[in-house]
Amino acid sequence: MTPSYLDFGTCLVSQQRELEVTISNPTGSASFWTVISDPQKQAEELFRVVPSSGFLKAHVTHVSRSKMIHKVHFTARHNVAYRGKFIFQGMLGETPQELEVRGQGSYDSRHEALVDV
Image 1: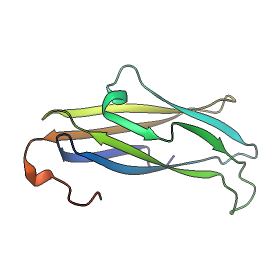
Image 2: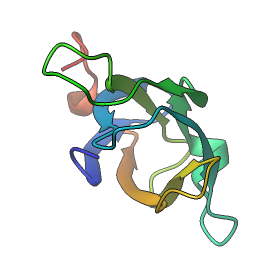
Image 3: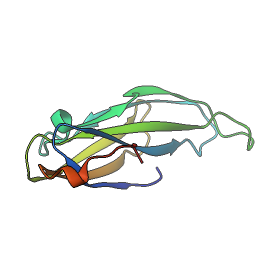
């Protein structure tokens, strides 16, 4: 997974921000996978991964569809720091991959994103 850590920085409260993460299947067999949020963290309510499940083809050549880009969304609710963790889990026993996410909320309008970058 690239990257394995996402930092949204400081964001205006109630404004959704978006970053991307790429997962890949380096094996010679296809893989079904799903994303679950760590129940110890607050990820599920504030951070969201789209899509949350899918299928990756086997990595046979450089043109194989063995990679997928995911959108990770963050919406701060208050003027505090947030952390979360998502686990990308293969349904056929593959090694789980973790994605740590964090972001900071602010009521200061200078953190408003006019364009989502």
